[in-house]
Length: 362
Image (tube, rainbow, N blue to C red; front, top):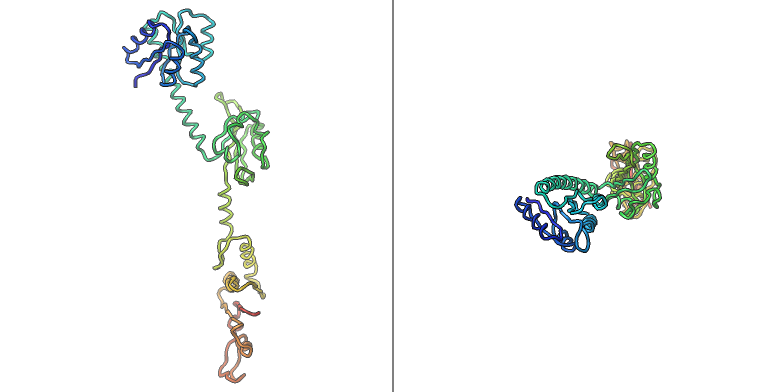
């Protein structure tokens, strides 16, 4: 793809000279004779190189350079001047001009400067592409990332940190240690420890408050090094483990227990009580409204303990007449009463070493 170049000069002869030289080299060339035309061109097109005469009618080429800086355009700007002096040159360089070229324009010097400017533009574009890729990764990471300088001033935060830590981009530049935190301020302590000792700090299972309410987080802080590998602050990575913590808690809590279903706190208490009583040689009173699962609790007590290999005998006491109750429960021998034609085991004997469940006793 051919490079696009903008020429800004109020002298038509200069504009035509540039255009003739550059179109011969297959560059795409636009021209502007004043500040207004130049700004219109810059607003409508992306340029690889811009040439701007320092002296224009009305606003100057320096004003154009300021506007380019304001728009944050990554484009080398070469100043054109007929009378180079130390003041204008230093002002142009201070504002970020790539270089300047004196009049009259020499073709070889022009092409040499364009080659250098395009190489510079290529490096700028590559650097910007790399920066945007890193920024996209930084912003899309689900863990919150906060960087601070050695004075604890916030340098940068990502989207996840805004959500987890209830921060906003408006907090950049403020001291993290002075922010109103609704937690135990473990994050602040970890950052201070890393800045003081220049070592990583890891903390887990920290409870704090956010826009969503109470949450469980883990955090790690790392020393932040500059391009010269010198210490310049710290980075904190915050992971929201609220959902994971909830899932782990649910896994620890029994969802069901020997056909009994339920995971509420009350049900967990009942499961624990059954565990406690399963191997106890004792009488257990199970009370509750009809249909609430008393029989299921009796079965759980039996099958959860050491009696599970023996019988569980269930007796509906309300279905037994008073004159047969004793015989059914304790058995009888032949001839002990009218109609006792043979020996019969009682329910208690059948349940020996096992469990007997007497239902409807009241």
